[in-house]
Length: 213
Image 1 (tube, rainbow, N blue to C red):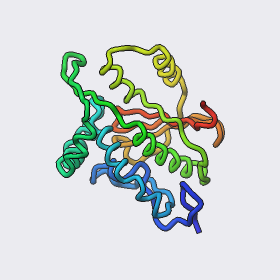
Image 2 (cartoon, rainbow, N blue to C red):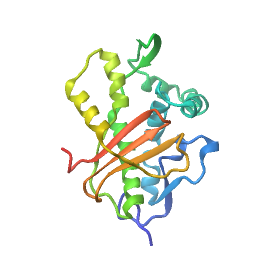
Image 3 (cartoon, helix red, strand yellow):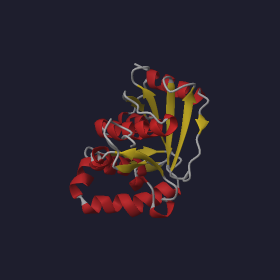
């Protein structure tokens, strides 16, 4: 019997990667799934909702992301005012390229939790074995919001962004590229980097934590 992608328990269900809620209903075709135990299929549902909402709010997203914000995220906020207040706590209005946008602090622990689940699922899909470490999660999409908020530049971050932009990632085939695409760089299952792209405008990099400290 198959084991869970995230632990040694017997799989009793399947986990969508990324979570199904990231996809509009008309885009839920041929989604990736991995075997999962009940715990790892449901244990982070609140974090998934929070992270999905944060990503769909990004100003560089495509029309699919914007529509999903209107049709899914907005309803999520209407359903839970507390989630709305928590997400946009300490938000500020700033000017970007002549227009007004909202910037707000991100709960990085929740964000990293969801991205680690996605990374472990993609690793299982790639190599058919469990990833036993954790990922270092980096997103210049999130950092850019902080840069706007605090109006400063940090050379170390700029250097990291430049380095990541120079890497020749290989794109993997996905059935819903307007929602999710991912890329791989590396020669084996030990030294590698995943690049995730949501709604053609929000990017996340996943690096094995024990290799990239």
